[in-house]
Image (cartoon, rainbow, N blue to C red; front, side, top):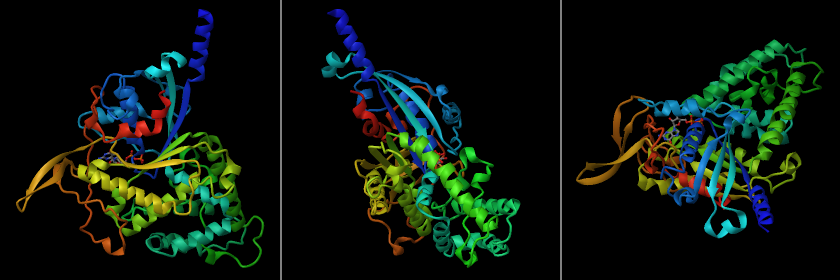
Length: 464
Ligand code: GDP
């Protein structure tokens, strides 16, 4: 009987050993690298620090041990380097995400009392956390478009500001080419490089645009230097009216587009995306409020394009590409430490409004979603200031730009989406901060904002 019982336990143990592939994405600078670094650091200390009070399995002392198994991964996330920089004095923000990488953890936990007899004393959750650029998701809509349709769409974008001005010189170069003449790949390469640098300027310039395609021209990942990403749209005014001769510039460009769809976009979805169980999408709402209307509107359009990847309901299109698995998506507004604590609720609500608008034509069939404001590494603390006899809550931190300590009242996060009139220059003043040192040991809840709630929402049900 004993033998049978222990076999039964062994079986239960194995059959309830769980795996979760949790993906983290967001546009560049949204805070992915720092989020993963901090989240994993807190998780690896969950059995001995009290830094995650709202993560039930940790708070109730049920985490037995957490191990980092990332060395077994093909693309390990640079956790050590990031932690080294953040824990040194003065601390430094790490290098941002440029491609796909992952952390693999094994978390051993004690089961809740009621389940121990049936399932065994302890269980193990194998948690893979995958980091990849949100820019890559912007490519999905290309699969549903011909090259000509994509060019039409891009022509519309590039005839309007702020794109038109930045791209002016490059657009003029397109006009110098006979697109029906036999193609010289070196010329296409030069134009593709030129287009990539236009995209970079749009991204890092004052408007900080987000809706930039093709995504691999912005962040090539493993395709850096490959001919496959030497791709750009040909503005529709330059399209010849008749046949496109085989071997011509336009013909070559068109076949590049098809290759890009077949050899880059589709494999990303079938090899990686289709294996994600849950997804976190990070959004930097405050940056868009700072930068103004063009940045904000463009970010909303980009988020809409990103959400297409979770649009399992509307058509059979995604289902033909892969069998969807994602059952939960969390939208998180990062850098909540840029605002005072009484604004966190507004930031939750603000992100919710953005997501609602972006998902207007999208149905998250079978996907549960939630919006939440967080800070991965809390780098400010609350302070109070007197103004005109009133006490105001403000923030204290080290400015990222000047390196000086500053105390400021950063302004309120609106509870409605801003309209055209709301974009006056003085309204939002959220500045970037240098990191507060993240200790290698003795982690506390004050080092982050709501990472524990993220963990509870994304993984809590698996620690049973
Ligand atoms: P990625 O491009 O999505 O990987 O973005 P990163 O994780 O590299 O973050 C980009 C920048 O955002 C960092 O250099 C920081 O300046 C800022 N940042 C990210 N997370 C936080 C946070 O929790 N608090 C503060 N104050 N700044 C943050």
